[in-house]
Length: 415
Image (cartoon, rainbow, N blue to C red; front, side, top):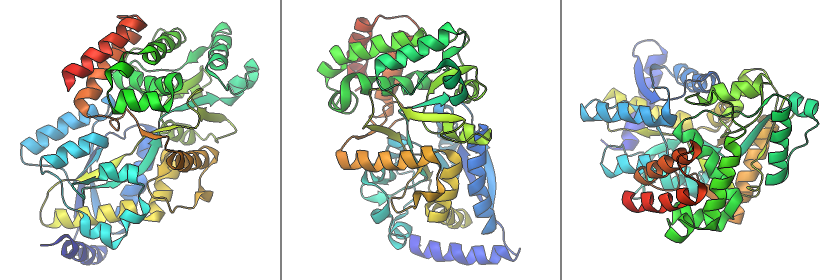
């Protein structure tokens, strides 16, 4: 049966289910478990419920998605894949290469996905020219989140350089506050490093080191500087950071216990969920030194090979995810930018509009880069090798020069 026929059958089944005669289900594996993430996911759940599709939730918290991927591997090995799985970057490509993902071409053609989804996202949504995933959003990762009241109390203006950023954190620390809220998990360490490396070396260095995997860039002076800056940041993190979940670090900023957090714009969903307004109670700005560039990841729902009613529900879910109405409703709550380029920004807050404008500008300027920390710059084996070095350095096992040397070796062994 062709995917187009499945689409029409799915729509017909939706009409039947709306009368209560037939109920369809999607089983969704994801790691959206924080308050802001759960609120955003509920937008999709309700959207599907309005079409008569039930939702079987399969949340797997922690690990920036790595724990969910472990669960997924076990399910697929057992011959029981979920309907849809939240997935990032190269992981989509790996599953597609195994032949595990469904063909969404007919739906994509009918809804003109090729025309409205940025090429940088399509590189991960498609495999060998076939659509295998529906992109939900574009998150940019090189953000600083700040508590406005604390900035005003300390007399701190938005820092415009690395030196000003360090000075602001020193002021907060001297006043008895945590300067930088952080959770000691490998993916969080790498998220910070992503932005710091971009600021220390610039776009050409980032491309050479994290995308091209050039040994000279991986072990060069810019990499050493990035690690030196990470050591500086380590001095502004509180003693209880080890193992802390990212949203708990965000809560420290929300509650006025910490001044800054470096985190992707999913953090904004936590501020919004707490009833705070962008540009008023909290501030967002690019990590100093990385202005004019955007490192991104894109949450996507990869659709696994399933049959029968599950396939019909799957197509309906992909269609719902890609609708402009859902893209607005979901991303306003989630804190991310839409995965479509034809979305009116007027519904978004100050940080959301800034994110959309920055993405467009970076796309035009050629300074839009897939995030190393979030699986959009290189394959998982290399990403994990980089994680190991970054976290070892952050925890004091290497000095900056040794860490740069270890980065070269780790990448070489992972290739």
